[in-house]
Length: 104
Image (cartoon, rainbow, N blue to C red; front, side):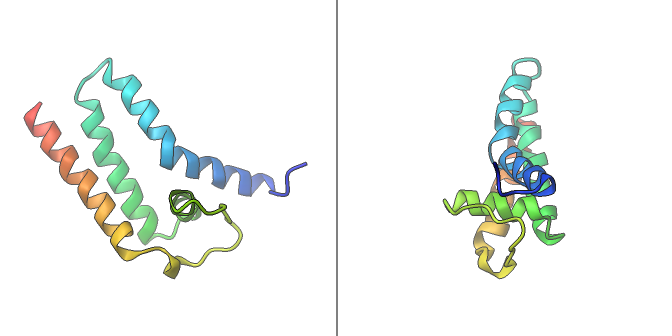
């Protein structure tokens, strides 16, 4: 049986959606509407930035997964996340998204 509660499982599921799920959804919807890939880049950047600033637990767990560390939604230390990752990754995705929307 799992050690995580139902709430922790939902946080971990959202972390996986933030880390991997949005990519699958974006590529599927890109088949219907080509600009959607770049729109999803913009949405991901906003989701990541706002989630970091508002200290959403699933964003912290997503960064833990990116660093190949076990997700701990019950034990969060926001100072552990590199500021360069928290700001630079959303900025890069936002710029690519805006450029893609303008170009296509």
